[in-house]
Length: 373
Image 1 (cartoon, helix red, strand yellow):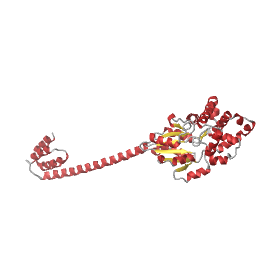
Image 2: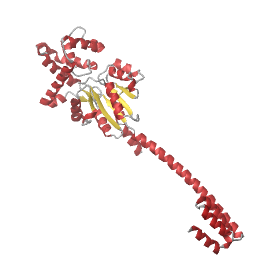
Image 3: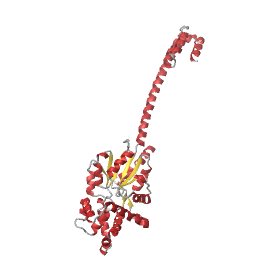
Image 4: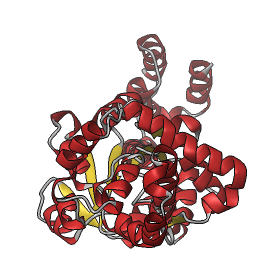
């Protein structure tokens, strides 16, 4: 169709022959096949040149220059668009990349020492009524409970509070607060053998004490627990972030942690993300390995482990499987000043305050505020 139109144009306007001949040369490279180019060239050879044809040719040359400039500009624009798309894709990738949180519960999220100490006393009454129900024990109860708070940094699992309560109540030699803080693992093993205690049985019995207390008077069981200030609000926000996943890795039995989070903080963590190592005795390091394999196969997520027990964090820090985890040791909870100083000067972990901790949980909020600006 284009060829026919151009032939008609040549017939009616012979003085523009040269310009049309040049135009065919230009169009050859742009839109025409070799066959079309030959047909128009043949027609244009019939025509003579004139001054107007020079003017026309100049116009077409200018047009070709403009076309080439537009083509170049279009190409550059396309290139810029592509770069913008790449940047956008990179930005989306950053926004979609997630953070995996693994948080200890007691001493990081919850101050539970009041409840765990009272549960230990109840457990002691059940195990050794002759020791815990005598007149002397009743008088010493508040003193023992205060000491249990002082030695709380050594406790990994709830039932240990029961052993500590008896040792402190009986004022056993080498079982003062200072000695317990220095070497509880050895002292604990000695007492387990002395009193013929089995770890698994103790765990189950301690859990039953709590279950019975919850069933008969849930409010009085809940009351001695307390969530640390600002933490529940930050946790609630974090659980709603699309770019974050929160897991609780605790030696507390999961149902107790869930009850405290829901009723005191309005925080709901999915059951599968409340990971208790109480019954299994599984090291937290192994739990973190499993979490990484499950939720961070591509290695794109940032992984954060927050703990208040230095011995646990040291084990994680020394585990080569967990080299990609960021480790934080809280400056509140159940630890000592000496332990905080150790964490402060350890290259593998960072000492963190509550405000900074809540800031980590709220990072998505900061991003949203930046976007609004």
